[in-house]
Picture 1: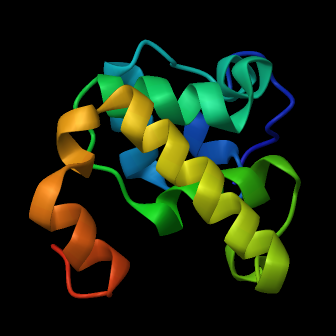
Picture 2 (picture 1 turned 180 degrees about the horizontal axis):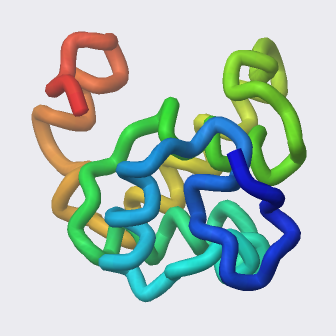
Length: 115
């Protein structure tokens, strides 16, 4: 893995993110790790959703943890619950059609679509 302080470093140099992240974030107009850092995790993820990426909670909190230099699985307990609320708000704002009706109810009880 390369040094993610280089301005031209790809998004995948952010901890927890892989090569597929480069493609998804590029579709959202974010082609460097610094561009993602400058926006912060919430706005960067919002743009990712607006560009057509399906919402995925683990992907969101992996990004948040990565930008903090932490492993993705470090997110637990109250911190994870708070991130879930942020994720749900971002998802509802960026793609309101993805958070409606029966799907929302199924997601609440844990039987919704896998993303």
